[in-house]
Image 1 (tube, rainbow, N blue to C red):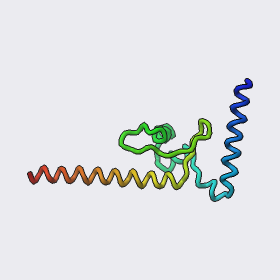
Image 2 (cartoon, one colour; image 1 turned 60 degrees about the horizontal axis):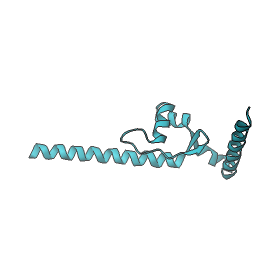
Image 3 (cartoon, rainbow, N blue to C red; image 1 turned 135 degrees about the vertical axis):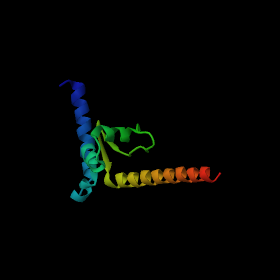
Image 4 (cartoon, one colour; image 1 turned 180 degrees about the vertical axis):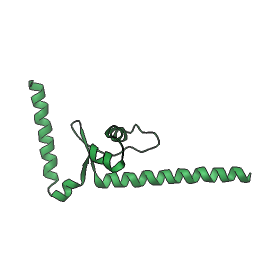
Length: 107
């Protein structure tokens, strides 16, 4: 390993230790989800989860995530709020589409 790689690794380990100290109880740790866990919950691929996190999915808001180096984690509460927000936005868009369609039929 090069000196730069060792420095980066030490920095990442320090960030993880700091983060782990904030997450003190097992219940809190269970509230943090990895990309594979999110993919399982959403029934999609890990690649799709990373696209959601980076905001590259059209018509869907960016999934809020915490970066630990290259690793991304998401709080369960953030995922739940994100799902609710996007579900409401989708329903709202469908209602608007239906309303416009009904107006076209009447006019």
